Length: 307
Image 1 (cartoon, rainbow, N blue to C red):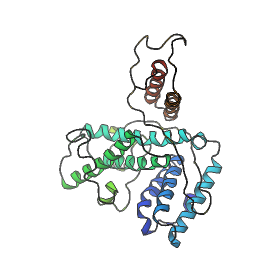
Image 2: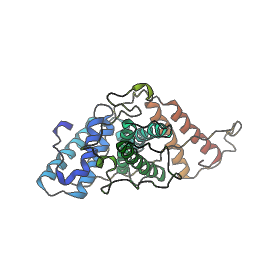
Image 3: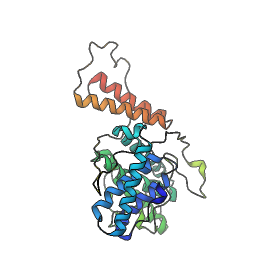
Image 4: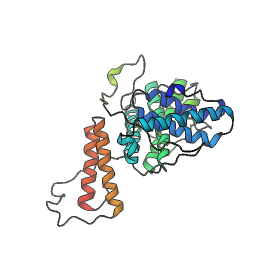
């Protein structure tokens, strides 16, 4: 399917980065490719839907999305909006956390730049699910800024400063290029090679310092295929990236259901999302993240507060 998608025309240059991302994930995580192409389609529709070159690309993307959805109709990442968003955000979050750890440890190299860059792209893709949460938006901004900043420092022979400059928010995004393409505008004619979810991989690099994350996730699929000629696919979600898990003190969880707080519908939905996040993390054999989200769900259910 994907090999029948034509090259991206010049007027749709902003879409090229996401189509390249999709191609790099076709064999690693097909569902990531699906969402990336859906985001590419939505972006392309806003730029040009009339020229012959654009229409050829749009039509092929729609055909791909529709076929992929039909062929993967039994996959929960297609049938459940929350599961699809959880998978995509989980991939971006893993990449971001690895690159951030390397950056704060002052281990600067092209691999860190590429992983920050890739995380930024995938956070962009999260927009197919609706408005980004504050946490995801902040991580996206920071990832793009860091990719640009470290790349420029390495290019000039300077030593980057680890972590944020002057605070968590100060200076974020100031060095991104005017087109908002982050590291793409810094000497690369196309996006850098995209690493495997949770396990960056760069040719000729020493793998000993890379995280050993085993990814055996299912082969996920697609969401809402566009209907009608060049209609804009609409997908609405609200799912937040998990933060650090709260520590549940002994005795916090009631032993009976008599004194459990009555939860509002919003809190019940939040607890369900934490549980789904835990399941998604287990797909990647990530027990730490799974436990983190289960603890948050238990804390919410037992206290009535989202910590």
